[in-house]
Length: 140
Image (cartoon, rainbow, N blue to C red; front, side, top):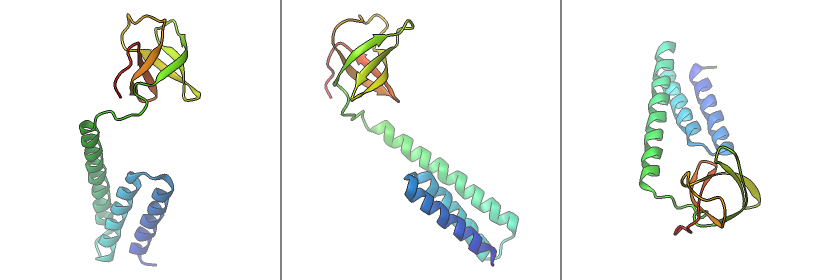
């Protein structure tokens, strides 16, 4: 079988994997493998095929990261969790807490170190899977 067929079969496998996982990085790598396949189809050496495919994969990944980072910087935090109350807060000695929200226990931190540990708390912000909590109900 011709080498370019292997390149395209690998690219097709990554497209199928992307459909199962939903990550755009698999599409970028599938495109890079396809470019390697075209290099093989046009008769470039094996080293050139690998080089072109690797460069395409690296450039595609960098472009995707830049696009995603730029989009995240321009979108305000539109989380529907902002402003929602949390309950059953247990405080840890280091100042962090465990809060009950949406049927699960979450890691939580007060918005400032001098925040009192009594009274109702609301979600001010989410940093990854950590809730930043405050006494004042923020506007969602």
